[in-house]
Image 1 (cartoon, one colour):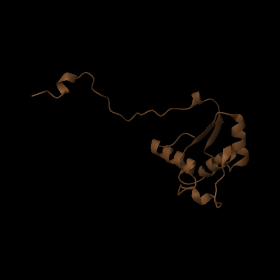
Image 2: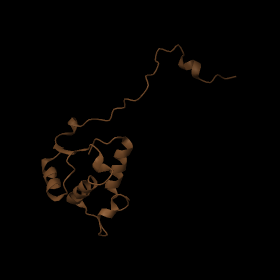
Image 3: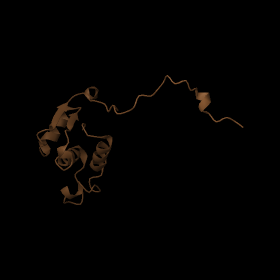
Image 4: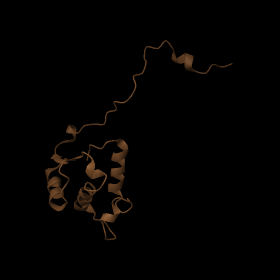
Length: 121
């Protein structure tokens, strides 16, 4: 799953997916004492989560590396919100997080590294 608005949002989603009984957003979805496990169960949790606020409002993409797993996910799980897409392919096609909000460093400074070090008295 990718397309989160920030790294923090992505990490919060990952934690909730790994800990569905402890996540305050996800634990109410399952009335049984034990959430589903295994590949099919994890995919059911994933699709349920993608239909919960706040995740259902994010422009997310579900990317499978196997058509067989994608078929299982779509067969046994809840439908995703219409604005989310599901694709299958290699990991090479995934966009990587690239920071673009940094300031350019001044590399043409006349200050040497030795000038920045503490001098002995």
